[in-house]
Length: 496
Image 1 (cartoon, helix red, strand yellow):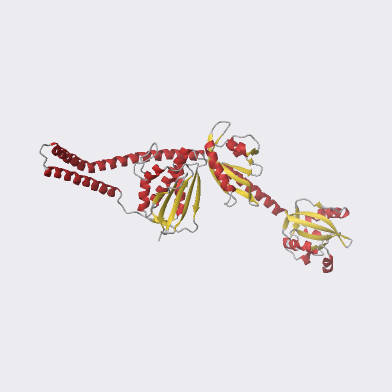
Image 2 (cartoon, one colour):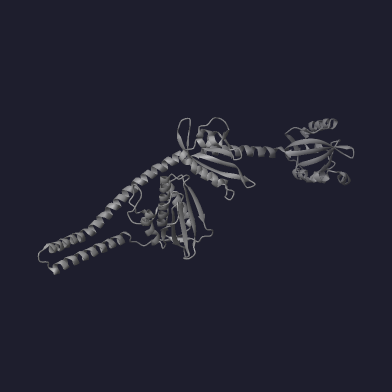
């Protein structure tokens, strides 16, 4: 038998095949078995050589199998002997298999090459695939997900039934990108386009995240949709965007309701604080102001008198000065009291602080802008009061959004840069928008208390923000030469 194997021209392929193979002569005896067949039948290949093929079959099937084999020998051609046959392993274990027979000639002698696979394994794979697809379908249905596949080469989008339901579209599985975008709310198209451009950038990670409103053309209902996907590239060019969309209208309505409640609560709280603060200031200043008024009347009386008494006039003016100083001192003591308390600081990752501020800003209803983050690699943690620093960032983000909205900027973009301020070994943060910028007169007074360019507001936001940054050991300033955009800088110390 060894001589026979040496003479076979397909020996290498026979032994290297990934399928189980037996070489059978026309008398139905096994001439050779490859390693995969040996492993599948749990038998030594040499032990199988010379055995009749029927010995690998249960007794109840041997006659039928041998009859089919004989018919094949009479008319040899590629064929399958059924899809569910039974074979016996060396330990008499029955195996469900599928067999293909192929005629081969070796040195003018006819042999039959039997290739077989475990039908059980095939069925298991098929069943596992079916179960996986069913789980995916159920998960997609439970989450209300729609699936889309955007072909960027042809500007066409494949979408499933759920996507068509959200967009109020026909039953076509294929839709143009223009038809897809038309249903998106006009105010949200710029933000969606910015997210798409970011995903298309070959220098990025290809991730796509966007939230926007979709207006159903059939019923006119407006829905909020959150989309997540990933861009695929070929030779550095974006080719396909595959992702899912989810209806988040209920979530957005709840956020809006909570936002309105929070705004109402904050307004009430602010009014109460303002009333208490004004009352305290009035109480502290009332007596000095009354005294200043009295001393002033004395001074005026002396000035109108025919005989001015210098001592009385001097006493009155000195009293005015003393009471004015008393008023100033009282006011400073009151402000110190309102600001008293030890500043609680902690070590923080600047990126986490920025993400928290972005989330809070969006929760206030300032959505639809494209944030661009540029953080220096391996930046050390900063130290400060987390709540106060987040408050400053939120105030700068809100001011930027309001300025861009007033200017009609599209798409509104806010860039946040964080790097090391090497001269002072501090973190240096830059927040800039792409609006119209700030004129010189406004820039000169922008940090003054009670100065504002808004129709509503008391003009304390930037004054308080500067005070908070200074309380945390840093500085806050406006870049005067940055036009047409507005650029704010602030520094914070690194953790020890």
